[in-house]
Length: 359
Ligand code: TRH
Image (cartoon, protein in one colour):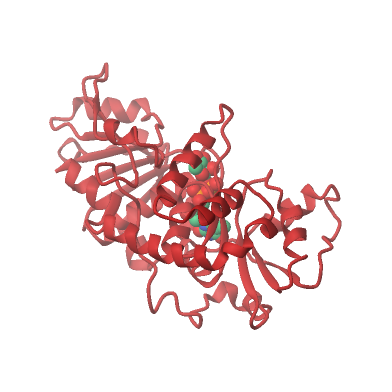
């Protein structure tokens, strides 16, 4: 089938990250023909840079405006049109669809949520004034939701510690042996400096892998934007460049603990099978608090009371000294959660469920 994915980048990398991951799954695993129309090609290309050139070659990446002039010949109308995260289709593109002899399936790909209500709304059509119904597709953890974007599943030999990506060779040399490793990818507003200071009071060494922009964020939050951050010697900060999606996945697999955010890195951290803090995207109406609580309900369903308290504390930015005593139990739970997740998504996850839905 032919798929057109529309991706408008609201902020950060997640919109592009999700669209790109979906496009590569549809192409490489399901043999689909995919075009992406995106309003920010530099961001999309940055994420896509590390992928197998053969997959990249098969995905047609276009500017948003190209969709105005570039609608396929009527006989080549796409079979499926995806509006990622509720972005509206450009009017001229839509006009082309309306005169096409065969109408595509239009799907609004929603944000991932663990809230129970999404299963009820998943896959429902919404009549549109122009006559082509729009279907709402809700990614989710439940069996009757839209699934998760699980591809590529990080496994051997990809996750081998010796499989160091070229872009990380220099930074990886700085890591100390027998030292716990924590990667950091969070939003401004996290009490990261205080968190690291607290970590520095524990009787252990930690190497902190700061993803692109995190050091500057840390400096800014310290109130001295140009000043060096002073932390105990047990804490080493290592700044790394922005890497491709696959390279970022590798980092998650090599750390003992990950701080992640948004939607795509949230799923990737779970697939890495390591404990993590999800710095959920803050929303003005506090809807994120409900979303986080819904995820924690699922994530901690079968765990001990002690682990529940520890993880909830960590995810709400309690200081590490308050929950670190549960880290071994949390690490074991992370592995079990990964295995369960893969079992629940054994049908192929979101891309496969989308294929089935359209069929
Ligand atoms: O970047 P994010 O915060 O993205 C989003 C957007 O803010 C979006 O508007 C919001 O609605 C959504 O979150 C919930 O976080 P996310 O979703 O984890 O996306 C980051 C992507 O960037 C992900 O695909 C991983 C990738 N990435 C790299 O490829 N290289 C890197 O070096 C890093 C740090 C991330």
